[in-house]
Length: 504
Image (tube, rainbow, N blue to C red; front, side, top):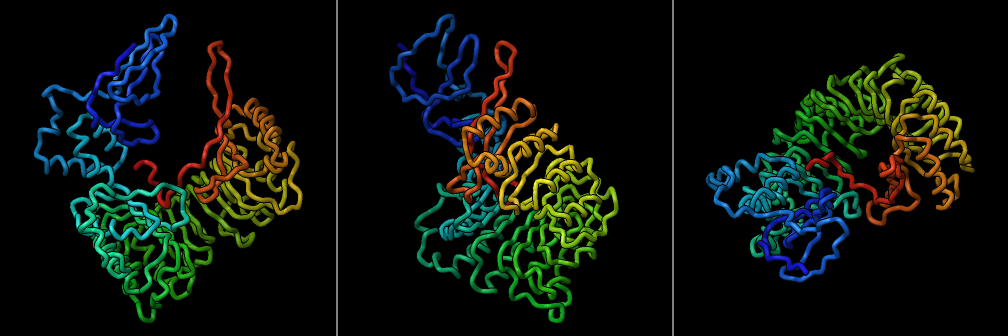
């Protein structure tokens, strides 16, 4: 019999390595004389449990986290509270905040929730109380780095907003639920976010043009803003060059020093706005990623020496490109053979004679990842594979033919890629008529002949994450007898953000 001793109930713990959350229950790890288990087992305080002792092993329950009872606190804890808060505010990554909070109880109280809830703001609803709270508490809003305002139907990643420090009496007043007051609080909250680096808006837009201008006016003053994504009917009231010759009336044109710019909507394809976009791009010479509508034809006039990712039809001369989103309009191209020597990722819409003709001009040794949404037939896929034999990731879309290609043809394509790690798309499932038993045999054949293969697509879709398909993750583990044990698991699709914030 073993009695679990009582420990500090407020000690923080991690639920898992991949999904850090703070728990209030004490956790224990089982330690063996021959092997250490990484599973954390939450146990009630004071409860008696019976341990089945394994032969030739000594099992001991040890706390996974022990709060130091000595008076030797970290130097950071000896500083004034205001200075402690200023130092922690400089930490940008959420994982760094978690590590700091786990060091001792005093730092846990400093980090949670004052900092742990104020790095990312992702909302799908109006949340007027949250905006009122951030407008009122400048000391907390200044720590937010990323803001993402999404559609209500967007479940690609989890919502994240502050909740513990919201004052219901001050932040949930009835007048804050009116759209005009909510937009005012949004503007004030954004103004308080002095360290804001990422802004993404794909949700419902403000009703009045003046409200839209007020939000963009605040963003135009953000010196640290590097990532901007606006999706929807923004700028419908923007004036042409006749009324705005300097491109400074509409606040968006004045935003500068960006490294990533994503604009999607009918506004950006209007000929009257093209000169404004060119002027805006000239104000961000360090731009690395650019996604604009395919109809934007003024891009050759832009000089972007640091550009690495592009999604427009006219390339010009940009040898630094590493990622390209492409919809070829015709077989004619300004590229010369061997162009884009640093291109690693190629994403395009159609794999057809026009697409293959254009691909002849791309440096074929550097491309490692490729994706196409549609293709005219399996013969075009074979030609594509012969052009890029060093692919590690391949995503095959839908075929225009009435009947799918046979299974043997797809297996041959996969086996012809010696470095293939990820093969995505429904091609294999279509070839086996969605039969899971046949698919199991296909997976076992592929894992034996493709030693680097680690992921395939499943036939089922996730109910919430925008119905994205689930993944088949292949697991390889060495056995005790020297053999390799191979298995696979079905996982839900990973979360996707409008910005790349996996590190936060």
